[in-house]
Picture 1: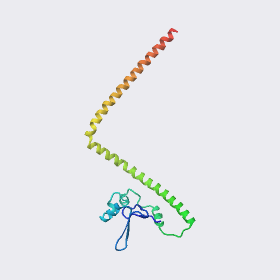
Picture 2: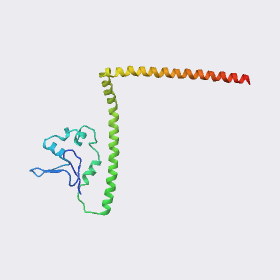
Picture 3: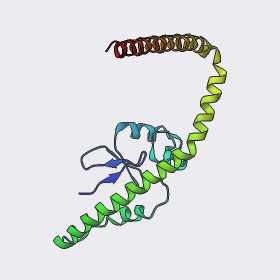
Picture 4: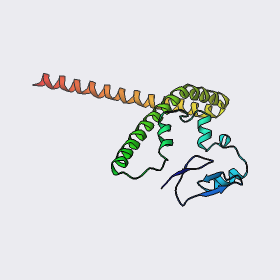
Length: 177
């Protein structure tokens, strides 16, 4: 069983799924779904269509160069069945997959770390553009904050009064004994 890659979006194409197009010069193109086939027929460039792997790699959103990709290419050669070899191959594939996932996570974390200041900058620009939308909310927030402070001061004052009454009661109680 061989899992092909979609020519357009690079997602896996399982046996019995998708469409296979054979051109007049005998070049075969595999497509995972009709969406990819339609876009290919419309002569769209996968590097310019936002949901494809090619787009993500050209824009630097995914790892483009990594040694783990080489293992994926070597795997497609048909080999005579050997139980030990298959066991070792499966273990190696799992190991390569775990390494690949860790590298992708690290790559994503680095990308997001670099993107955070840019995101904050864009948020500030957006706030400055639409400050009139925030002004009523800020004014309302100041009123609410003032009400909370007033109620807190009132509670503190009542506690002090009650504490003073308790001290007087204790003081008068001790004198009477």
